[in-house]
Image (cartoon, rainbow, N blue to C red):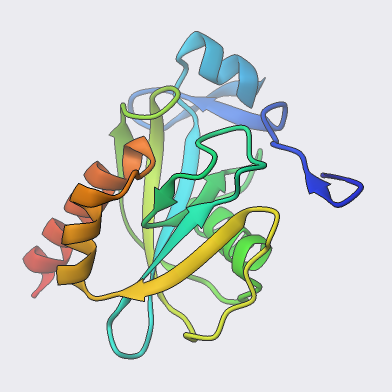
Length: 176
């Protein structure tokens, strides 16, 4: 939703409340899910370029949640009836102008951030020339895994970036 040129945070969007096995219990607002600590679904994507570098971005200062913090993933809440893959693809389009279907790697209950949620972690190889939504992304860059490890200890990242990225690396290691 946009108001003038400013983007409004979707804290009142409808999401599916889910249980500890990721089964739908009902539909609630995201604000209610966060306030009550109810599980809901978030889809995120680790973006790599053809050379294997990882996209890192800094959130816009205009955003209500985690303004100005860095992120390792692009993502957001899954809408009602939307799969993790569909939500991840929508978020890639909204935030980076990229069309495609990222590959779901795994899900887990993430207890960092504003409230607990199921986090679907995806991976996508994307072009290194992007058109980020300026109302959401203030800066972006491509880092090697080594550079990203350094950045994670030196820069301010969103609460879920550390755990999600370490799980992502462990998943990739187990697959090779």
